[in-house]
Amino acid sequence: MKGSTPPSTISAKRILVVDDAPEVAGTIQSILAQCGHQVETSTDGKSALDKFESGKYDLVITDYAMPKMNGIELAGAIKQKAAGQLVLLVSGFIFSISAKYTPPLPVDLILAKPFSLKELQEAVAGLFQAPSAAV
Image (cartoon, rainbow, N blue to C red; front, side):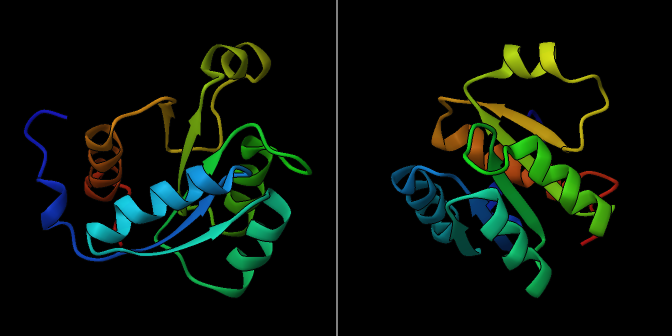
């Protein structure tokens, strides 16, 4: 994102990372924690929705392909509870998602897997700088 504020200048945020692969969730958690964010993880959509209902998050980052509830279903449930909630979907199935779902999707941004450290940091920073992100 050309011209965006460097990730290190974004104030600390509370972020929920949802991925059924613990190593992926842990890696994202580590990256964001190094940027100063407070990060919690969940391994499926249902437990993430429980965490979301009992906590306040500035951003939810969710994988698409998960058991029990996929990332689009989770994002939709979250947006029903809090329409302004920022949701970043990460997925290796971008083409499948666009073929299966009709826009608009209940997410603020989709980041294709695999992504680099810089791409993740820029996506998060960009979401917090977007006009709708008055957090």
